[in-house]
Image 1 (cartoon, rainbow, N blue to C red):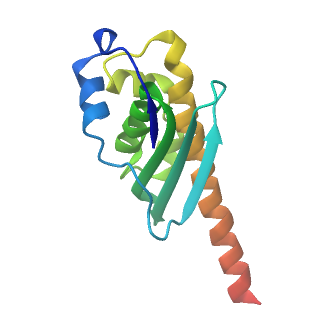
Image 2 (image 1 turned 180 degrees about the vertical axis):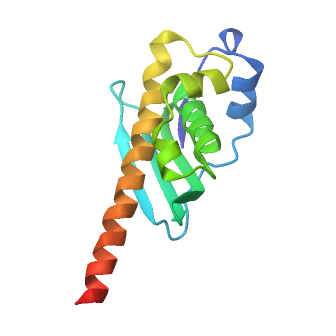
Length: 138
């Protein structure tokens, strides 16, 4: 994970907690779905998911970019983990901003990138699941 500097004088205590003590950074050994997306600013977020009975059991994130990208990815993973896929798809950038105690307008794209990456990882899970089902039927 590469992390560019972010000014800590303009962020909340919650933001700093996420930045200094991330809990879902890394990879899953055998993810059910995964995705990596690049945002408009060039930062990337990779997401690994383990889904069981349509519940997000585990989420891991990897980032390459600024502290806002890392913190938004981490907040997304904390908010989405243990939700149903349907509930996770309803998360919005505002939910991440609220979880972080606010987010500058010029960094809301980091929250969108985190959610889009999660959506792609879940889509990859269902693509893999359908491929496994077809394979077993043949």
